[in-house]
Picture 1 (spheres, each protein chain N blue to C red):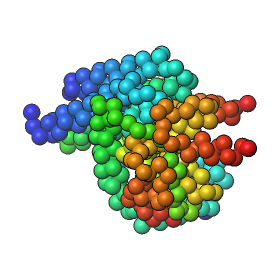
Picture 2 (cartoon, chains in turn yellow, blue, cyan):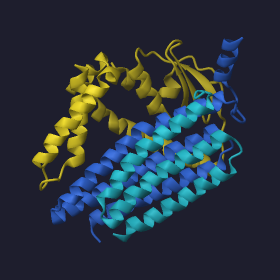
Picture 3 (cartoon, rainbow over the protein chains, first blue to last red):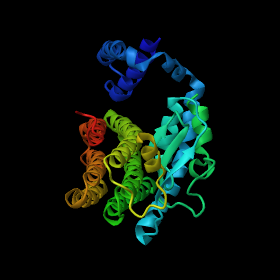
Length: 167
Length: 123
Length: 85
């Protein structure tokens, strides 16, 4: 099963990279060569990818990622104007805070920490699944929030999305 | 000058503005972590808009000439964007953690919970 | 379109500013941040230059550069933590 996931992923990337080799479609040589190389890659990485990877074959998950893209993009727009404001005025109050989060597996931690690195004012320094906490560098710690009890002021809507997408 | 070209100019303007802002953030902020904020966010955002401009240009040329070269250009720049979006925040996280573990402390920090955790763990 | 070329020149200037941080940076992580920023800007510049000269091969190089520079950043970060003995 992990072989099939890795094979499909490699073959889709190959198809994207070689589109347009025959008109706007694919030439036969590219399709056959893609099958061979995707099989090699699938065989070589099947132990690294692991059994868990089959959940990424679920089409509902892909729709979820597509629905997540505008949310993330809007977060990035806000983040960039925030950083622009701080570059120009120099008003910062930095600190590394510990944020308790309620997540279960590694994929959710990866999605959440990457998302909050790209969104307003926060940068993940360390994710600790054992304590269920993230250590986040916050560029402008609001007064009274040096030790946040809940994750809401830091992660915003992204924790809910991460929990849903990484399941 | 038509609508598509205007759109391309707007995308290029946003891209250049935020890329320059990201590199100015490197000079302006006082320590590693705040510099990482500016650098990672602004340059990722600027690169997204650079890729949008190129994709718009390529799709417009594909529509006009029908040359498959432009389809390849659009798809490949989109793949470059996805590679960058996946790798950039992870790289920033790796640098931040390495900086903290190699002993660089955040300047003017009001709180440093990670330092407290590391100090409590080793003793 | 020449606009892509001029945009690339401006992105190149941004790259030169991050090289300034690479030269000045008081600590080693500062320099690594400079290199990381420069990598992202080089990818943006290559994509723009590929559109300016109508050469798709530049964009292929940008994909490979993005992935390899990420590995480079990870190796430096690991080394700074004392990982690569």
